[in-house]
Structures are given as structure tokens and as C-alpha cells.
Image: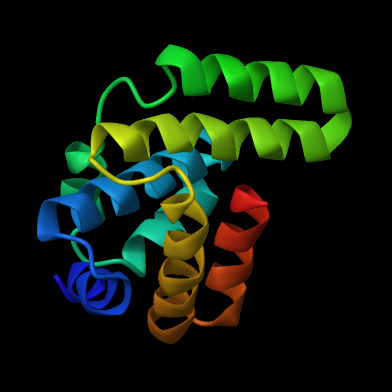
Length: 131
């Protein structure tokens, strides 16, 4: 898969880590977007169903998920909710053997890929879901 290859070469992660990390980000987008908008994003990423299936199932669990929930509660509003989402992804990234801060390195690579494949409108949809 082209996106997985880009993640591996740009970020120096393993193929399974790239698939799982991309899957976590897609799962977050799927949770935040309506079906029609997510379908546009998914159509720009060949194999998106495989990537979704590669995401760890308990991505929001454990200490990182709890911290994300507390951060969201303390900050309030959209900014807090967004930080909570990022923090919950960090737990999933740790399950894949990566530091939680890798989440922020995956976002631009995936957004750039979606923009190349699906255009600026589709990238805008994904960006809105992830911010």
C-alpha cells in the first residue's frame, strides 16, 4: 500500500506500525465524520478497510485514554476534545510500540497523501476531523 510505504520511509517505522497508526487515525476520522464524508476520505486511501482493521482494538484504554479524558474535561470546548482525541490515539500508538508523540508525525503524512489522491476538499474534510 502506497500510504504505508510513505509512512515507513518518511517516519522510519515498521510496516505493521504504519498500518496500525494509519488505522488509528482513520478510526478517529470515522468516529468524528458522517458516513458520506468518511467515505470520501476512505476512497482517497486505497486499502483503508485493511488499515482500519490493523488498528489496535483498545486504542482509547489505559492510562493514556484516562489522561486524554481528563485533559478534555479540564480544557473544555473543542480544543479540549481535540486534545483528548490525540491523547487517546497516543495509547494506541504505544500498543504498536511507538511513542505517543508519533501521532503528530503521522498526521501530516496522511493529510498530504489524501490531498494528493483525493484533492484539497477531501483533505479538508480529514483535517477538520482530526483537529
